[in-house]
Image (cartoon, rainbow, N blue to C red; front, top):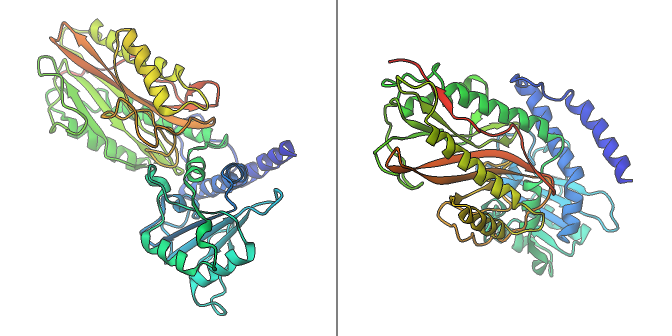
Length: 444
């Protein structure tokens, strides 16, 4: 039966969104993007939610938000043409007994796409919460999931006002049926669909291409261009491609005999790029509701140089080695804190000075799921670091290796970040990773 359902979903998907993305950088028009986003939502509802709700023993999931104060999970279920919730939007997902198909309802004044069926007759029941209470009473769920969480902000979306109103409206005896939907929420957000991956690979490739251009003679003139100029070039280029940044790009530099640099809570002011500088970029783009997060390095050649100094090339190789050590520690069912501890112990034993701060990525840039360190929490992360790694999840492999350079009389930090998919067995980079420094050679 599962095989039959999968075939049905594939046929439906092909008819809903047409061909897979091209190998190049050509992006879908906005109207076609909306079709793909809505198809993603329907596929996730069919392929991901039933098993998740059964796994977490939640009979009904209730999501409530008001316009401009959206629950981040509810946002991922809205139609692509909705920019926000409208007035108060209540979504209800019910899992009937004995494995029957999920039921999707919208207790809302407006029709919420085609996935959710209207469940509020405003003429007979003017009060919205009373309409919700009637639906709950009719379905009689034993466990009602709401988005409350101590450790995942993305799973903590119900506002205090809405929670109080919900409790007030619930039928007698139902208040104690409310439970946290934390793990259901995280599962919904972290699980990647096979249908998403070709588009995700395209997004990652486009990000790499934009970084390669930003770190080239086409954009940077040593002695003239500033780090801030490159940041704004990336913003402008993103807009030209009809894409969005989910954070402002960051371009910084490390320079010989200027110290080891500040921690991540500080950012240097804009600096003019000079020959001999080691440049770094942190850049993220959003497309079809999916997010990228990438960090790479470039070297600005001196007048007498044809390639980067061997010491910097070796430093980048050390960063790649740290990536390998980290991804080799990935195991389904292993806690993020255990992955972190194992990777750090292995790296230190091999003479590497590591800082590891990798995170899930997908429907949000800093996604919900297994957190593997933070730059200021190298001994582990409470809550999200205790969450166990699951198959079919995507991560930003983000870290840095501090490497002592005798030729610079100071250490450099090789700061890298790439998207990689974990299928439950192995880790695969979506569009490879940086193993050579970008080189900038234009003359003053």
